Image: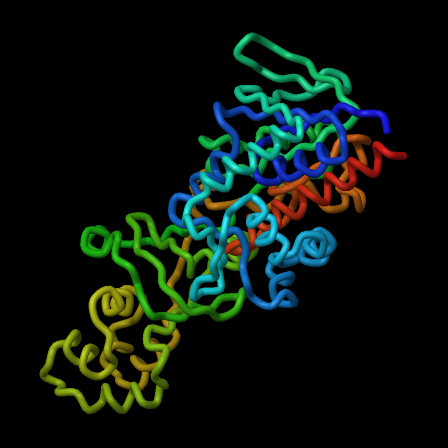
Length: 402
């Protein structure tokens, strides 16, 4: 087989996974990354415990990608959550499954895994060039800003793995959207995913409760009903429970102009029992005491009831009980995409073939978060980046061997 020259633009998980697969096939692979070091977002995610995948039933796992689930399925079948764990083990990283079903490295950080991975890539002959920022095309070649000036690169095939537009200070700023659109690639606007939301708190509420977690609740939106907790912020709400509903709330705001996250503040108790217990409380007691004794609710949960309920609702045990079980928390807008954990939108599935090659740019492939998919946190995002990187790499290998 004749060795070919492959450019992989973007040194995150999708790009490095593609580099591993293509270089193993015997091709000359160079990874170009804009930052001083590769995989900065991967390392940041690992600081609080890296979710490399999720252990839930695979039939459920593959539905976690929303409207893109059908498109994602072939890539995920080719690199399943079990495959992710086996791959990590080959690199010397033992994993364990937490109580939530999330799978973590035992070291609880990303750096040992990344170091071992980079050693493997080096052993396979992969060249990594940092501080090489892609700035678009010169004809069919790729142009980079480098510490020593402008560089133009021609290659036999290329993979774009530049991420979306979340956390741009780590390297993914979404600038590529205009360059690909100019080449006729169909692109949906990038939008925040796994993000917080603004809420119209008053100054007193913010001063007292910003930074306080709201624990042991369930929340319902068009995405379904999930249990967990979230945090009050100066601007609104954030946290894993909010992220699970982010896509539904964001889309509802865009389509209807308003959206609410419906909270059950006392998940273990029925509305009927709450109404009875609240009705038994001394009417002369304070509202806070009646809620604490009759419903087991205090602190920030009481403040949320006061914020989003009418005075008449708070004074009637039946109506108050119904609100405790279904309190609409009104959100007004998503937080900016620069603060989001991930992004939705990007290259449309109709713009690529089944090998992840751009139809408008033969020989140029795309993977990872550049594609139009989104998923909740908990290992789904990283697994999908690994899987699409591998799928695109197999597409490159197939094209080069024709």
